[in-house]
Length: 267
Image (cartoon, rainbow, N blue to C red):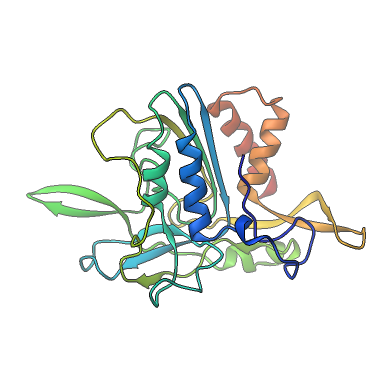
């Protein structure tokens, strides 16, 4: 188990976290590679990210080819060669899918713009996910794995009910970055092979907004020993509550069914 965090639970952000435990770009990618290197036949690999997602326009790419999904590490402002630092969803996909085919991968992305983290055709109904960028090639309509620019409705987190529970969106505006995949850590060879079985829980689809808010009954104890209301990502909260309700013994379909009911109650 490896846990990276930028703040201690219930504590102020002014309390410094060990740099080796902060979710920087280097630490996230290094921890992902550590996770898959240790994978053995029959293992279940779990990766969870709670933070901010965004769309990236690769300025080294072709015009109007679409946008990359990405997540923001804590050191994104520090930049890389004068640009912002992000982790493109394709990089996470390449690392996680390099585990042995006999392993199972479960991913929980409690952020926006993570739809393409595993398989854009891997929806429960077998249809391609919404928001893909399509182009015409020799008379055929095909996608290149990139996304259309996704809209966000500010009313979702600015309405009165949302403000009452201190709701906040989990996305940052689109960024233009030169070659956002530069400097990525190497993964296993890209030779053709059987991919592992993988499941992804994504907080928001294209045109939706992932949220964090204060959940009823959720508190944290601060440094003074006082209980304070605590905000949670809606997806992570519902995921944990569903597992507890099902006594940690369920299929992904059963877990999703309970999660949908819990989310409907929050709305």
